[in-house]
Length: 155
Image (cartoon, rainbow, N blue to C red; front, side, top):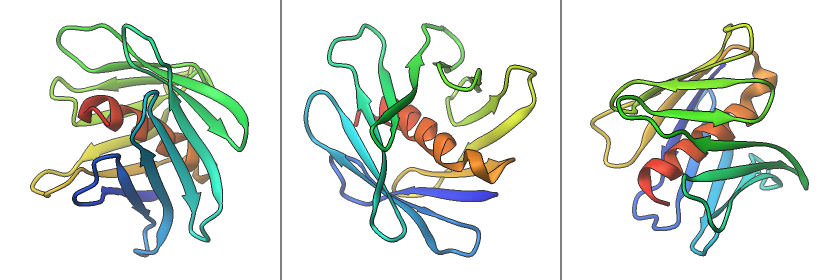
């Protein structure tokens, strides 16, 4: 399953649209300007289905992932010098990125690929292409990518 994750132009809080392979909007994301940071995820019909919430005081950025009202995991930036790495406390997944932090892979506990994320360059706003192996993982993968982008961009 391929999803294209695009940040909206002129969005201070972080506004995104996510398109499926046919070009239809699959998800909309609305960030809120406040501390702690918060992003709400809506399905294509406008129903709120998930949220990301940052912790108020943390040395390294961390987001809690919610589907409905249930916390399903956390994404925390790891301290590294040469690569971008994040710890995921959900599904025993691991995330690794390249030195520039533009491309990431998400693997499970057996090192089987769950999804890959590639940042498309030459756009005015952030664009990512998500290649997700199992469509049932799409929402969680999207939430992880949103947490990574929010950490990198300071949203």
